[in-house]
Length: 588
Image (cartoon, rainbow, N blue to C red; front, side):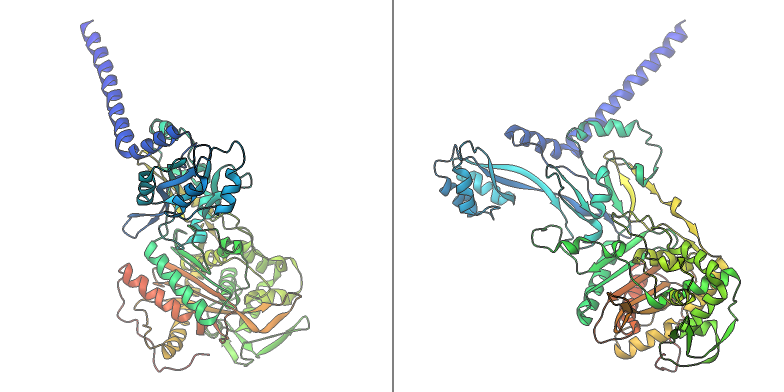
């Protein structure tokens, strides 16, 4: 009996100790971790001014795993005037205007203040601590200086279209994520009024051991992204230089890990600063990397080649007779230089970017197989965790005119989003498997537990590892020529000391009523490295550049710059035999 009593006593004592430990831990969170939040909440409630804005953080992730705030909260003051207590509303307004930028002009304020029953008019926001303290010290009758929090983006315009923005929605009654990750993960980032009280124990007892969740079922918390801020900064800067140098209407790029689909950087130009949405063109809020579709041109040829190899209708040693131009369904298709090359290999098709070679492969595949492969590539959205993603414009796959298939084989007559394009091309670097591109890696809960997001459901095999390896080998023959041309025009560029697989694309831009301009182009560039053990895949584009016809002239230098930066930044070991082939000749 005594033994049973002692056992029960031990169980009760253990339970008491566990509960005491939980209370101590909870007190630590209340007083230390969330202490500032509780203090602000209490201070704001005491004024009767309503709830204090609260929202989770979005983080960049440095290469060493350090988290850097991409979207967080700033704390300061707002100023309101109570006309019923202000002895002189005009003087009260002037006192505020001397310290801060007001949100309404003086005549408008005085007109509102003159209306009967007005007791609370907010006239200034986002004051610093110094400004708030100065106004409080003046003790202006009728002027209330209240604590305020607002969304703040420390990086300014860095990854702005992807991080997104917060503003009032259509109802106008609550701040919420409207674009980018702010919108995509609004449920996780939003905070209810009592979330500070509820989250801790809810997280503690809701399966904390399960550290892997789907993006759809992510709990309330902070969003941890795969975006590396230094890489993002470099990509954004390079794209701005390209756009400005060639007076393009827009430029964009994506860098991702082809083995996982994790997006390391993505940027577009022009961009915006989400800290100030008052003067921007709403069109710039769109993310062209997922919301716009383009005809990419010749970077489509590696996918055509992979389909032909995988289907067994060609081999790496296959040849065809190149006549320079052919007629298909009464339409003329030609190589970019109209030159006939006679007996031509598959390597030459990629190295010299031959339209006739791609159309020959399309004919060998036949329409049904071509449709099958390209539907795998582009028949669905990628599922990237950004809002408003569109699908590609691939209606020509459902036609029966062979000329449409010939055109699609070299990237005309089919338009896809940049994220669709890099997802498909990255399969060449990933043994024939497309991974689901994504920006968020996990949700950090208030307890400090980070639940990783599971993106494996988006994995899609599209062709064999053998076909991928063969195309990769072909692409390594392209890069030296493009690099040589870029180095001839810019001696400061350096040739990468690891094997690189790459391909340029130059597409004619479609006219509004049909047909194509002969002097307006869309340039693209895709590459990955090290080609034998790929770590990074890069897609670049610039839309309607001026003064340069081919993408090798606009984007090769930028690709080389990014490649060498990533090699140095991530410490990728060099391969001494990677030397630019000689002699230096201008590529075709």
